[in-house]
Figure 1: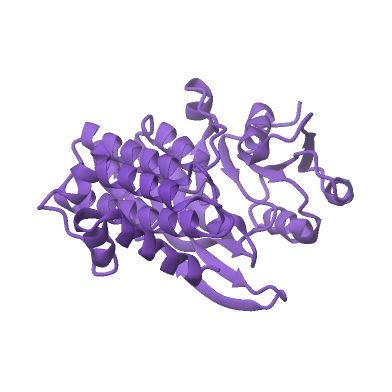
Figure 2: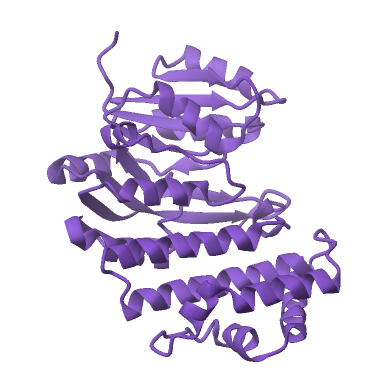
Length: 342
């Protein structure tokens, strides 16, 4: 068997022929070359497999794994994890890209600190329907090295920047993943967040690298704002899991509780908009029922009614509607949000 590579990058692929070559080359073209790229073809119906085969013929570091049935990105990543040989594991999506020289920048930091995980920032790139770029947004964390009981506070800061909920802006120590059998679940949303929270519970060292290392591409017509029946249930579950993690580690400070309260309000607004959309086809009665569930849940009462929590100016109107107004006001708010993302 060939010598074990230092890094394994796992890329789920489903009907991505339009973007696939650029995504693959962004990984294989890194100046740091001690890696393998495992592309998991998740039963694509376009020419993705043919594209992968052509690329693999030109670089032996590219492996192709084929799923027997379409299982979604989480299941595809799990297939890749089953055959990954790297000391560290990373991920990439087939319509995104690694920034040039990413691995050259993060690997020395990883080695210097013997970190269990290293995290970096990203650049969100938004495209219009005609394929032209609309705007870019950099999300870059502060440099830092955290050990033991200092890790939860760092996690809270990453959560505030929305950087903790992705899997492609990190490298993970493979021995931890395998020892504790940390894998992706099959939830509709947030399988990457659950993967991260499961991993960080066992990590002893976390390195944060203040660079934009990943190009996260947002295409027009994506499902980001589409209707998902269990969107809010899963979103609240996500916040509850982070609340539990911080509390168990003595890090649920006023500041961190405020971070979670504002994130919960963000999910509430998104849920109201999704529920009011044409795609949802929900009756007013069903929408009101969902609003009441938001207003009365234990997590809402814990985070939004805590007088020590600071609600940002952005979400104060939403907090007022949820806490003090009848459900009808929340429905009107949802209609306004739905119009914005229509």
